[in-house]
Image (cartoon, rainbow, N blue to C red; front, side):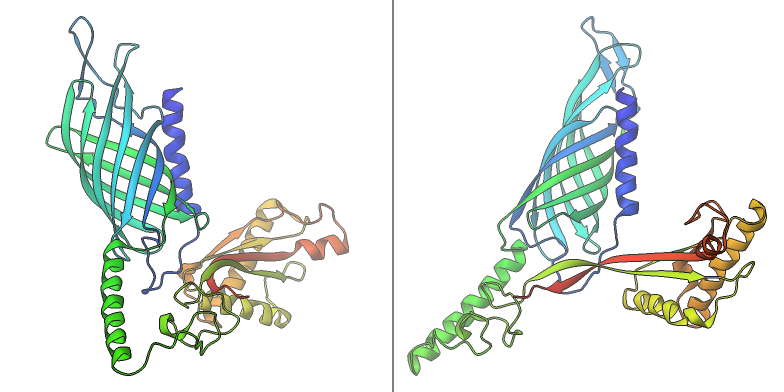
Length: 374
């Protein structure tokens, strides 16, 4: 059972890393998050180096099992420092089997690391920890490759691959964590810098006001509900929802584009009737440059399976050629799959059913950042 759980959790992490949509990164965003700090519960499986020794009650030594152990709980606390750097400390329980015994070796990992965010989701990290497995107590260096996915304004999850090593041992951990955000001051160092800038500006404003007239606390030029004297974002659109500083608040939305192209009997030629549909898909891919598309080709139920697989692939390739040659989409962003007659829309042979089954299909979906409106 331990081995089954130890294999299933890494597979789930790998699936999340592959399946999650790519982020729309912008240089001015805080990739580390807008929270003051976060606390998370961790679930991890680890492969503990088999060179470690477990000493039983009779003072005999046995090697620990170097396979992936059962899932163990842990705790982490992280603090955003800048828009790309964050600091984290964590504590994980350790429990692994012993070769030749029914006993288990227990211990813990306690350490800290610095995380660098490549974009809104993907990050790398480096740090160290103190790892104890039964009698062994070691200082380990740890590297991290992780993926962060925001669930809502309060919660986000992480999936990580974390090898650790020293001169004697090499371990590997797969980690899932669910984290809750506290506060909204944003990255610590940036917050301090902004606070100093705002304080200096406030002092300058106070001095100017003392030399002339008192501060105007009523005027709201852009009518966003935040007076000009503390409005950091002037001229925001009137229908935008703003924060306490008068700046637009943003949310994410899912946008999508679908394509269906029909074909004549035993033909892989895209007729001019579908030029507009193909162009709309190309425009969507140009607007969202991180997207990739899979074009699925299909046939009706007439003919052999082998012939129809080839025909369906040629149909999918014909649409791909139009995207590349007519609209300038990079071919590396396009995958074609021929399904032959294996996925009919209507599972019968008739004029109407045949026409509906002779087709290619493609679908794209992506998250975008949009302003909240009243």
